Length: 164
Image 1 (cartoon, rainbow, N blue to C red):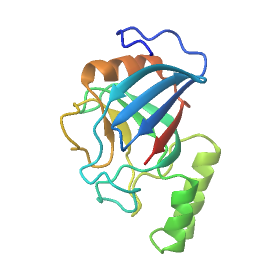
Image 2: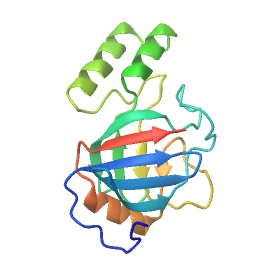
Image 3: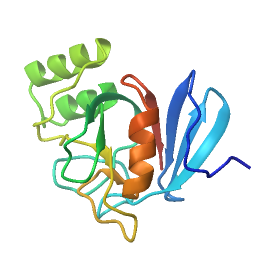
Image 4: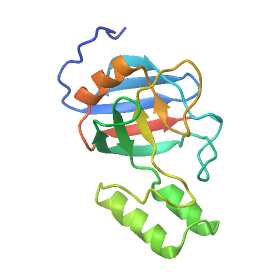
């Protein structure tokens, strides 16, 4: 069983796996599970994020594109939503324009921040604020103390998988 002590060892290949159904965030170093955290999700947690304001936490493969030390929810790690599949779906459903689609695809290809203000939604973060209930607008929340650990351990570019 992985340690739940407060000090995260230096990670050579960090990645995060979020298990929505289990309300669990797993911190890995390569294939080694380092630590698990309890989490809270969006206020409407079932299913994949579809549109801005739906209260769902997206599912899929993302990366950390930003670290915000001045988050209104303690600290935060910005996730690269919307991604390739979200952009394709948004274009096919008429939610975003071809230009928005192309900008999202280019941003993902270059590991930078994708467009955050489209009908697909955006501004998906892992942040502090607590885990008493599912209360976010689609983000992943952990306790502030644990967010400090993650913030210090996770570099930009870290892979993040969000599973149903």
